[in-house]
Length: 160
Image (cartoon, rainbow, N blue to C red; front, side, top):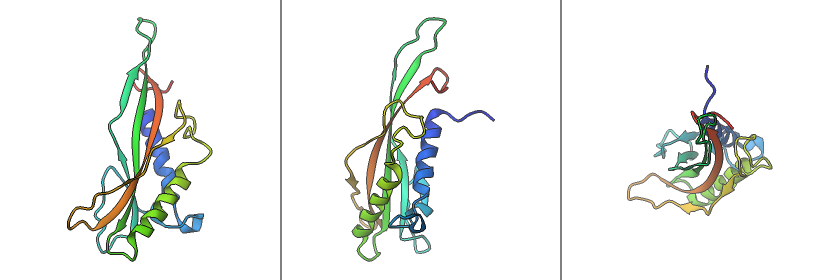
């Protein structure tokens, strides 16, 4: 079985970290028990009150060298990832729950290992939190925590 790309490995590690969010693991919420990748959930009546969505944004890649026939190019990529706290709008004090999930996300992701197990070439960075605009009829409220993951790959997607 071929190895995953560095990008896949980064997303897998972030998903692993947020999946550990549970009250029994010392967090405020159980939001890690329902994690969506690439999709913002609606959270219907049979869903939990809180969940997490991982959204991958457009990355920026820069080739940094290796133009000769003997050397493969190295591409440094900045991958924006947003982890979203999603809470049912009709729950009791939904914004209080959003804040608790945001705190849990930060606790789970922002460990002392900012390289995500050596996958990143620069430490993981966090941007400012962003509240969702709630469309009429939307069943959820929430906010996102953006992270920037910078990594290097050789030509063909192999780790450097």
